[in-house]
Amino acid sequence: MKTLTLLGSTGSIGRQTLDVVRHAKGNLKIHALAAAKNVKLMEEQARLFNPAVVVMMDEGAAHDLRGRLRDLPIKVEQGMDGIIESVVAHQVDTVVTALSGRIGLEPTLAALEAGKTIALANKETLVAGGDLVMSTARKMKCKILPVDSEHSAIFQCLEEDSKTIEKIILTASGGPFFGWTKEKLATVTLEKALCHPNWDMGAKITIDSSTMMNKGLEVIEAHHLFKILSMMG
Image (cartoon, rainbow, N blue to C red; front, side, top):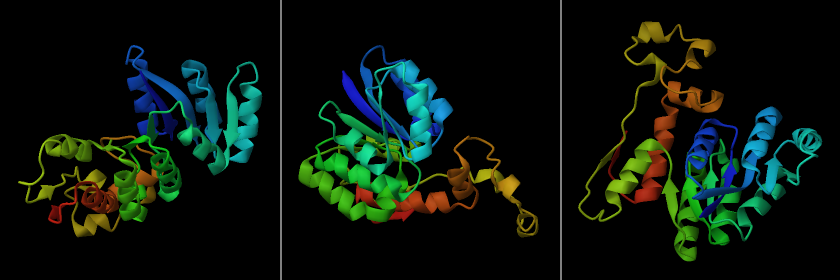
């Protein structure tokens, strides 16, 4: 059985990860869940998966959650200190980093220093500190397993031998404005940009996808993960 700490449990990737845990028939166990401030969903997840620890980044949310979970023997922590403690715990085998933004860098480094496997769904970690993260992983002999669909597929293709690969091409759906003319693009509103045709990813990632910024971040992520200089997005 693998024991997980899941960072970003209330987001899109976090919810999908918990679906996998639910269907893993006892092969996966949750030690800790962490999120920003969605107290209602975190309470539901805590009651369903019974982790030893839950962490809320927001102090007020942590206080609220303690009251909601007072009938359960679940420890409620707050802030980055609580997150770091949850990823370095000796019970944990793998840390799933599904946080949004560069806030994922510090706990990822802490987990690697503690010898944990990283399931990486936080591309900003590698954008902000890719050289440091990858060198720490090599030093500690830790695996970094990409979770994003394109990077996961590439990882599986390269698992045997990457020496013959000359180029990586990252695909893109084009977001909600694929095929629009320059004139039509001038009419884009925030509401339209937040309406992705395929995925429910939260506001930040949806906007990054709409502007194609997300694809730029993925190119940087792939560079650090696979050390192949020729990249096309």
